[in-house]
Image 1 (cartoon, rainbow, N blue to C red):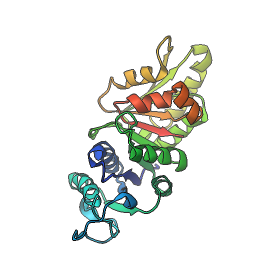
Image 2 (image 1 turned 135 degrees about the vertical axis):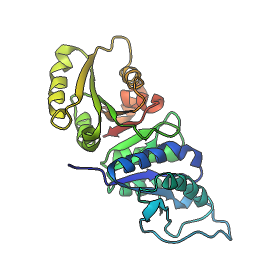
Image 3 (image 1 turned 45 degrees about the vertical axis):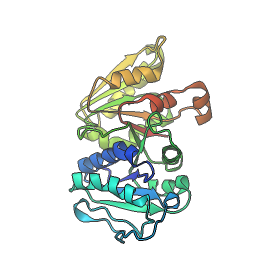
Length: 280
């Protein structure tokens, strides 16, 4: 069975307090899948005061020891401190922290392309230049799935329940394909489609048959939106479970159109209180 083996997480030294959600998400997934965690921070934004002494070395360290590649110091100490909290909390996880040279988006995208999933913060709580650049690079430039997490730590059982937002389009299909390791391990899966039976019912049942090939505990739900937003309905359903991850395709329409008209992806990024696995 395919699995995730490398999980990437950006770490901000300047905004280390905002990293608890993404770091806990990365290490929780790594523990579940026996994966490595690679933390990355941007060296060019870091101050370099004299006299600080940091260990050199870039190889993955056993026993949860976080290491740095000849780090720029200053804000690097805060990035390392935030990262080390979770490497100590999850000693079974191999972990490393590496500095990125150059522009954040391009540098992060290059690393994310060679990771199985990247973990970032959501827009509503983390609408900073760092997290916006990290989200956009991971979603639009990596070709890999992105786990978007709210503020605060996520529980270790997150993902045992999956809520899949199904729509018969390429983005939703890509989300399913990239999340198969998570789907195979889930204890309960609800596939939810929003619309009229005559328009989405057949596609929803076809998705159900496909997913049952990977996990027998799959159930479907068809909801008519009425006067409620699709994103609102999805988050109301997701809030029923403590251990849920919402799985969905991202930006079925253009990014600009969603931002102007308020599409489902933008609504979820602004309002979610649960982890969301997205693919574009």
